[in-house]
Length: 85
Image (tube, rainbow, N blue to C red; front, side, top):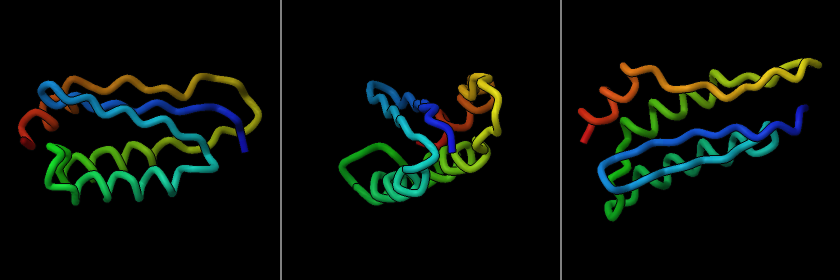
């Protein structure tokens, strides 16, 4: 298990959702996405939770190398988030 911190961010209008997680709290971060999506006071949707959870699951722990694991979102990712409303 590495000690790297992963950063995942979502911008929806004026709101900013930033998630920091490592290998040890990956599952807790996934549960947090569900809690946010079920909160009617937030603009965070179930679609947002699905997209971000897929990104978290695709961030696999690396073996012994020290390459950065931060991945920039693709332009198409942002389009999907904006349309999810």
